[in-house]
Image (tube, rainbow, N blue to C red; front, side, top):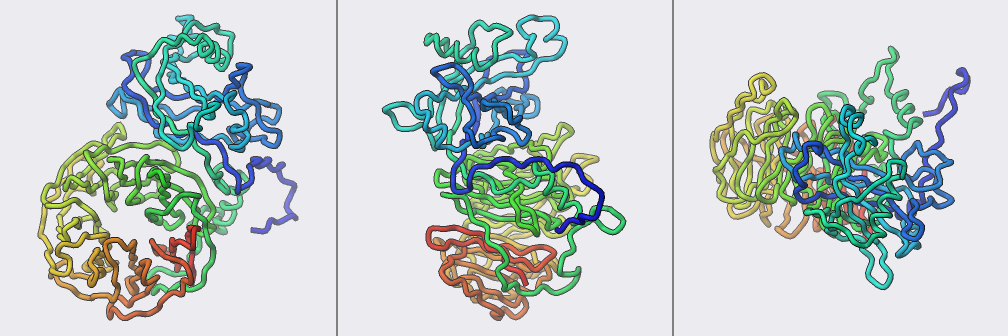
Amino acid sequence: MPKDHSQKAKKAKPSKPSMVALDERIFGIFIHSADTLNLNLHVSHPVVCVILIDLETGKQVDKPENAKHVTSFYDEENVKEILPMMTQPCSFKTSKSLVPKWDELILFNVDFSHLESLRSHLGVFFVIRDFVTMSLANNQAKYKSGWIDVAWAFLVPFPEGYPPNVGKKLRLQLFQGGSTRGSEPLSHTLWTWWKKRRHLKYPSTLFVTVQSMKPPEANLESDPETMEGQKEASKTREGVLNVPAWSRHRGQTCEIPKAKEVSIEAPDDSEVSCMRFSRSGRALAVAFTRVNGSSTIHVFHVPSWQFIKIIGSHPGTIYELDWDLDDTEIVSASADRTAGVWSIHKGTRKLLEHPSFVYCARFHPNSPNVVISGCYDKVIRVWIRNQDSKFLLAEELISHNSFISALELDPDGQNLFSGDDEGFIRIWEVYGAQNIESDNRISIRMKKEIQLPEFRGYRIQSLQMHPGGRRLLVHSSSFTSSLLMIDTKLSSVMQSFGFESGRRDKSDCSVSPCGSFVFASSLNTGVIVFDTDTANEKHRYEMDDIKPKSITFHPFDNFLIVYGQIGEARSILVFKA
């Protein structure tokens, strides 16, 4: 948005981070978890502090000459060394477990090759520590610093004569700390402990992964200038923040997007496993899965399509994403046997643990305090947030004879639809979700089962409610009848779309918000648009060499998002009418 230079002089612009070139890689460390820690009354919310130390000198590693902002946007330019970084605290009270889990990615904005050139001189030190109360720090000299050091570990990422310890999950032995001097910096204390060579083992281990990462192109939350421009662009004449002016008005029929507006490249060695627009349409969440199976959730601003932030990650593939009603949280279903609830603004996460793979998870449309998940163990679970903001298991729905592969709720949240691996669909009635904040009760009972010969023996890939509320778009792995619209009251097929896909063919579908069109994509057929009422083909995209794998339609504008592969490259394509 062009600025009005006739206005009075503005404050000096803050300098932007000196990021490395996008074709280079930066240094990242994923802190997974640790084994059970020794019981200590002063340790209730431990963190992991990461320090890069030169093993020859015992000092912190210096920044490269061309790097100014390595650990923070507000790095002082006169700071020559790479400062330590720290994870978020892991609260034992919230998790109700003495097994700390951080699942946090720490990024050092420094060229990966710079640290790699240090070879065996580079040491990465990890300290599990906790902050103590002011009274304890004032009354006991050993806690004068305000911290209690639980245990420490070290890693040489590039040992001389051995393969690098990069790109794989590592289990590090933890050690007990020795004597310290209050005036010594933590880096020198760790180096002294390491130099003694006789390390006293702590009865626990720490799981970490060191990897090279492609840096984000932009961060709208950390760039004051960009955020200011967004706010200015979205202000009304009265000066109040408002929703962007979408091109499609409420109640207006959607148009078929045919013009490619922008292309977003996926990170190297990553594929999109699922995408989901926020309820307001102002953000797009994308789950990227790497070759090693780990996944990260990236959030993009709409309609600028600028990268905002990575809000969370799983060590396993993410199968589904869903936003809450207020666009403040995202729930993710993952192969690591958890469903994660990630806060967009606070940066916190809550893990809903399951006995097996979690294939689907949804927020209740009327209550952000209710999450429903479907698992490989054939059980649908209902989770309710308590007063401590922890999700507790409230109910288990046991009816399916095969694993739960798809979930959907109607707009009012009064009906829950579930599909399984054998092609059976069940409809459940939901009671009490609207009052969940007051009485903490919810009741779900099965209303009926839908058994159609077209689905028998084929996995239900996805279920999507038609905006009208009575029809359900069913996407299955059937070779001949993979996409059908059914009447939920009569349990009969209303439309059969001429779309063929098989079990091994990555395919996807989406209903337009107006309900007039069905968009379907597969590697073999490309992207096809059908008329919802007649099932006639309305448009077929000329994708050239692109192999589309996933699609989604914007809730308030005429945007179609297509993820596909072009040779070795993988891109997210944005089409607009």
